Image 1 (tube, rainbow, N blue to C red):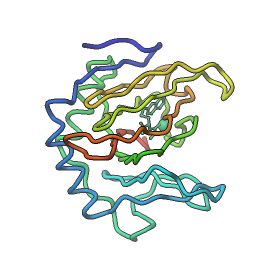
Image 2: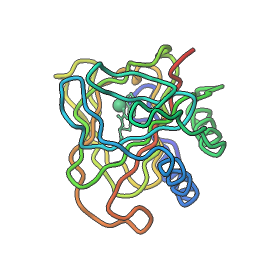
Image 3: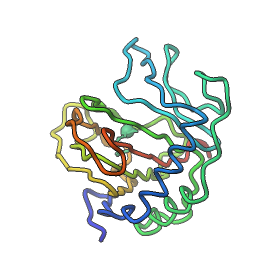
Image 4: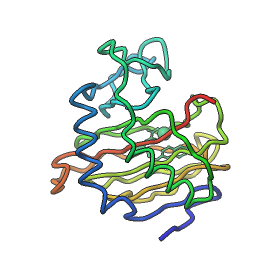
Length: 204
Ligand code: MD3
Ligand code: FE
């Protein structure tokens, strides 16, 4: 069932649960070709979240900054194609949330180990900020922080659990958000990890 979180943000609780096995198998296929990697922020910090991508473009960060690129700088290889099942699920969920014709060209895959976190940030490296982002959470639960339009604004906390899908669009697209340090645990499908897939339209 769809619950609004804020204007433009809809949570589809457990929406991906029945697809989780297949999604994780595809995550394994992608990461077998372009392994998860702890990238370095422009400020010189190693990210606690390990990342890979699939699709025409992938998001990454290095000393030069944040960017979408056709190749993985770490390996020099192109990103693996976005599996049809990924694209189809992202599109269905965007439709359910009221964003028609979503056609992602990038899928960032984040892997969280115990203690891994994402500090409050905005996603604004995409060309058309009218396009939503669809996020799929798999494995261990995490506390998501959802803020306002300024870094210092109050934040709400939302638990994101295995199979939860959130569609972020409209005015919510530019809200600050982050993930608190992951609590250790064991999930039957993903073991000691949490995975998050974000489907994006990087370029018009
Ligand atoms: C709200 N990922 O990859 S997913 C990210 O769980 C990111 O890995 C988190 O933030 C994760 O950039 C959170 C939920 C999410 C994704 C994108 C958003 C929330 C968002 C974009 C705008 C507003
Ligand atoms: Fe983000």
